[in-house]
Image 1 (tube, rainbow, N blue to C red):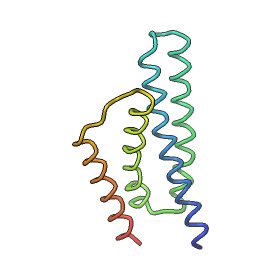
Image 2 (cartoon, rainbow, N blue to C red):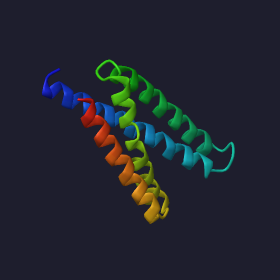
Image 3 (cartoon, one colour):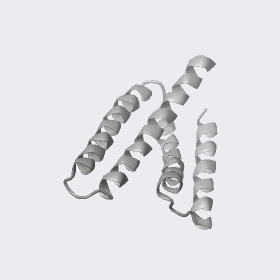
Image 4 (tube, helix red, strand yellow):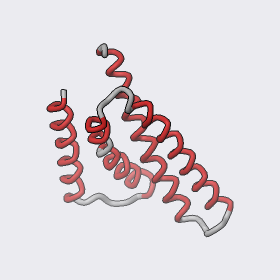
Length: 116
């Protein structure tokens, strides 16, 4: 695989991970809505749509990467989820959580570079 194709595939992999994290945001918005209201159903529908798009992307990504490589990169979704929590829901992030995210990122980098 050429460097350009690998870069595009890697960007698509991380776009899929971002879409997966966005589905969690939609689910949180649905959970904070009144049960069975229009807003409740709208956000759950958006979450399901995001998961459907993610599933299609994921299947295509697995054609370009080994499962171990692709699945290891999914851990980056934790970073997106925490960022969305802080930015959209005013959640606080503790020092322990920051250290955990750093450990996850270092683990992904080590695993990915060792896999090449």
